[in-house]
Image (cartoon, helix red, strand yellow):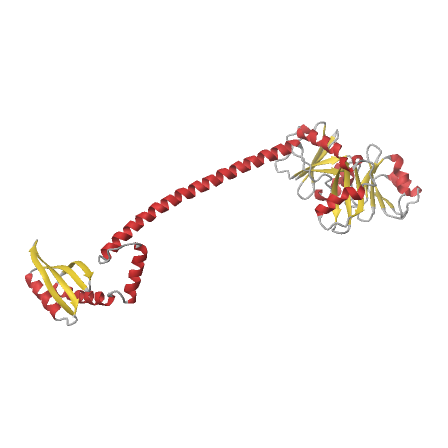
Amino acid sequence: MILYFHVDTPHEWVLLDRHSGIMDKGASITLDVLSLPKRLSQLVGVVPGTFVTTHDIELSARTKSKALAAIPYALEERLATDVDELVFALLDWKPGESATVSVVEKRYVESLEQRFTELSWNVTALVPEFLLVPLHKQAQFTLAKLTDGSYALRSGECNGMVFDGNTLEYWWSSLEDPDCAIAVNDREVARRLIELGGTTISEWDIGKTFSEWLAHGRTPTERSNIVRDFHPNKTSNQSEAFYHAAVVLLCVGIATKVGMDLYENYLLHKKNNQIDREIVQIFQRTFPDITRIVNPRLQMEQRIKALKAGTVDAGQFQMLVASVARVMPLVRATLEEITFRDHTLLITCTTENFAGLDKLKQHFAKDPSVRVELISSGSKDNKVSARFKLQSA
């Protein structure tokens, strides 16, 4: 939604929906009593046309910043006021072509800024009253007589002026083409222009105030805003406060993120140390023949890869273990412990009795691929425990 309001008393105002349809309108003695909707997107101040002039100039600049910088020099000879005391806005421009610019006194803009500072809402743009006069599709000019007897002239999307009743004939005489089409909102004015020689004059009932004109369409605010950097003091303070608040929130967010990352890194480091200790323990149990442990992870990986590749006595180990696996079920023996070191497999097993132990030795003796030696045997808890040494034959 967009709300247009006149900067002078009585403050006429119009509320438009997002399709530029009029939702509400009225007038207010003071601005601070205006009731603004929550979803308002633009708040546009309507400036009397007598404070603003528009000019068509030639600019050879190729960038917008250079074009804006060149405007005061291009208009300096046309203006009676020092360019340092004026505010310029580029309303219409194409690189390297002609441009339409607006001119307004800086002192007037500053007075509006001071007035709006006391309000609780922010003005987003300033538009001259004559640029709200609707454009007639079949007319080159739209001439609107105002309630005070003056005239608002719209001569293009970004061009126009306001002049008093005594200047009407002078304006007519300045036209290069007396047959140009002119749409007028007042029948008497239309008759007068016809008497002056106008041949294509038509009456167009659009009303005499901008609240009535907006019912016939509007030019986008970005093409009629005469002060591009209009920031009342209150807005600046609010923006600065918002900026500081955003910076503080950003710093807090960064500090929180860094703190969380540091804490997570500490937990991961602690977990990593724990895993390293467990790897060392597993490595020592699995490969007791290796006494020098430098990097347990790497050594474990290398040892496993070597076993998979068939190196580091992997063939002997697998062959001896296979022999044990074949014999144990035959005599109902249980394997309790196994150790492989220096090409020798040491096992500890239990059988139900000594007869079972004798059968175990007999089966080992039948395997031509291994040499088996009984190191020790004994009875405990109604079980016979024996320790064998196996080597490849």
